[in-house]
Length: 240
Image 1 (spheres, helix red, strand yellow):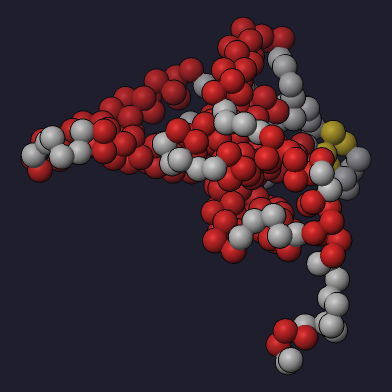
Image 2: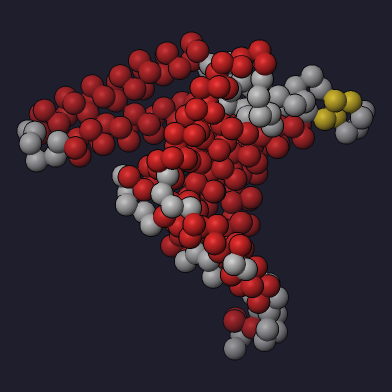
């Protein structure tokens, strides 16, 4: 099984290459490159939040606690005193970081529900809905954000499967197939709930037409092929 640094490094490389291709094709701008790179890199550690001792779990709940604390304050901003804001911020942070964290570790098993393809799609759609509802992102940017989250997440699952194969001895470990799965009969009811959540998020997501249209219309492929190789000599931008 790959460790935290390996997953983080792999997700960063996959996200960097993908963002570069999208930027080169004219699909995204330079500022979006940074956003999508960060989302893809961060999501490459998300599957391991079901491990009680993982760095990803602690980082995720630290971020979630801070995010929700500020989100609650922003809803009531201007109607609270400084002391009230501090108390509410500390209360929300403590409840999420320690209370919800503890409950989460009780009910999750490593290499369980979070190591699956529907979990990757759910995280991607969740980011799409959050980007649309809370950050007023245009539909195409929200869907692109979700795409990179899903991409980084799946890179983690694929890497886990690769590490389940011992190429030197041509032996497959028992963990093979436990990451890139669509369903598990042992915990079938959890997967039913997950697919229901996936359907709800898809219903709440903004119009996906502009995102998929760039691929179906040929715009992405055309832009990528036009800029794949230099037209005026290699690295001419540095000396012309």
